[in-house]
Image (cartoon, rainbow, N blue to C red; front, top):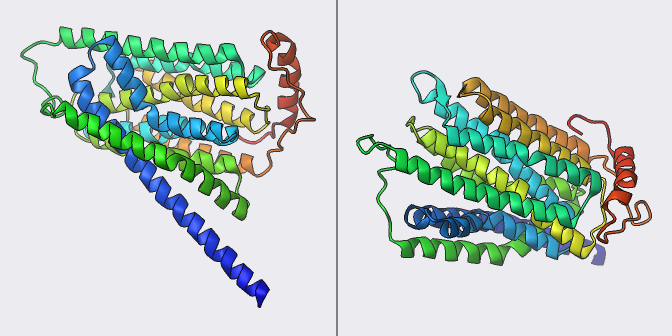
Length: 380
């Protein structure tokens, strides 16, 4: 009878943990939506200058950044790595594919003409991929963190300068899209949205990570899988829905704006968030795990594919969107297959010196260990 009561108690406890995980997931999605909505309101008033635009860019990156820093403070770098990788995969495959598919279908010609600024954003996304590959070779490094933060600053500066020049060159008698005709809302509403969104994110990030990890441990699910799917579901799903809605308007700027927003979010993940991850890993001396290698390769592949699609062709059709959606499902299946047999490197497997100047001496050894541990499955 005592054993039966103990089993019932454990079952009820896990049901409560599962409910808490689902509830915190919904709250994080709500917080991310409030934050992005507030940034959108304030960007129409204060997004023209470099300092104000940079602050708004940091606030727009807050959902993913807060979730990442919460995971790193709890010494869960694998979960943080998976959240970044999943966010990049969701944005560059599913989100971008849906936006291209709906946007091209809403036009008479069935194709989308990409603006010059948007194609430049695709080039920037491609240029962030070498940093991911360098981390794959040498792990967490102080210089990689600084490079990631520098890439983010350069991206924000270029985006603001090009948008200001584009606004200045627009003819006065050119008709505006429905998004351009949206009336300016009070700035206080934007600040309120941002405050509420950041408060929700701060309150529920820790509960979300703790409950998700407990659910994974009780059901034998790998942490990287949960971080890859559930993290982006909380912080990226509102953006994907909004971008898909904008793309269906069939207007000149709406589809380009939705694609630019998704590419910009991916650049933020592959520069700012990766930089923060490297700085935390260097400071807290996180041990390198073989689970990070397939995550980085998968992230690099998705970012490179989306960047080349947006950068190289001047116009894209529905076939590009369908291809990216199919790629998302292939990536998801690959992630599930890889997680079933990834061995974790323990302290005795890799001896790592994280002091400054150890990059060159450790690169060859760590590359050998990573290659020996990677399973040869698709996209690994």
